[in-house]
Length: 95
Image (cartoon, rainbow, N blue to C red; front, side):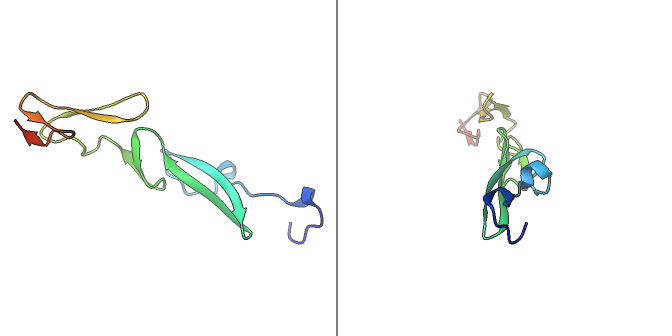
């Protein structure tokens, strides 16, 4: 309400609750305090996904090289399982 005379009349907007945000469906929306009469929120990709929150992709997508298998922990962290001929965090180095 514009021109409110009481704190009880002032309402903060919550884009996350109302669905007015632009977060990706694989992201969490976090309501932030409004600033200069403008609603604010933040988006963060869920565990196991990467991106800016407005666009999220699987963290394993394109991560491992040379036919390695990508595994995700329960916390969404990634790990490449290399074959016996490769090593490195992303199995990029031939032995």
